[in-house]
Length: 366
Image (cartoon, rainbow, N blue to C red; front, side):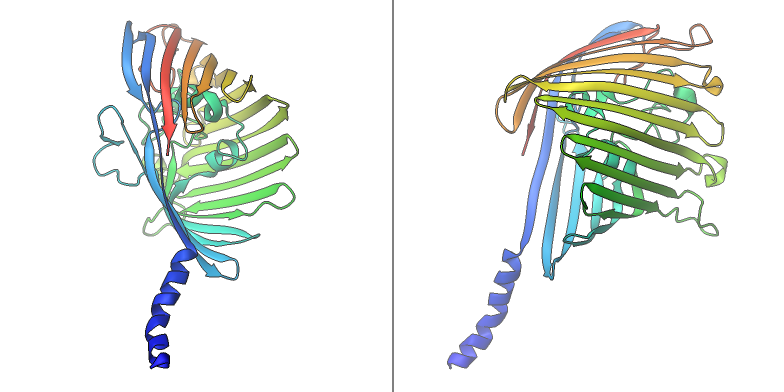
């Protein structure tokens, strides 16, 4: 009888053990606030807007311990508008932010499959790199855009929205990503996105590489990404990005510098962008961030250029909730009068060569 009971109980014991070695986490971010725009298509605007400092999203991530240091990992996340409850970018956008599954080995790295962030975001924007002021304090308003719509990025709402694809707004479908563990401060990554085009291996595909190195308070990163689009020479041309940057923590001050280069390989249109900035923590509650950017297009983009200053003051109400005030100012120039209107990411274009945004907001996470 005892043996029979033991045999009957063993599947439940094993199931309980497997459950104890697995984890599933529900997580999310919510960002809301009020923004004043000095010039949006010729007029002042006062808007209730969300997903500015951080995207408003929710997701589920998990891991299952397979033994021997191996585990299965997955991550599903969706972005939405808090003010309307609608999905972003629209209906049918379930888990458009990320949808991946893969395997991980302790001390070696992971391989994942699905829709994923490209390596410009992974190795320049997200931790541990944090080379872009957008991640820590500038948010969407600090991501690169200006009078560069002629760059002509396909499937892009403005033609140049987050044109260097560093801010995580561009994901790669049908992709395979390999990311190493960190060895003495060094981390490597590679990504390939399948074009799924009959008769061609290279059409509509994506190729990316990335490297991070961190030691003490110093860090650096570099990344490359090229995505080909059906709208550009039948999938044989696309948008090529590369960039690199450094960071240094000095006590309560965090400094960063980042350079990116974006090219439409069909038209030759190119934009170079340089930003420098820093974040200072006065105490565990108050932080002040400031950032300067210079963006310059080549002759194919009428030598349009933009300069932008972003600053943000943040106060932490708790470990999960922060209130903030942000100010952004962009001014522009170029070869063609009236052809270089200022345009800060996330708002409509100005009808002149400068634009200002002031915002107060709140962000919480779970």
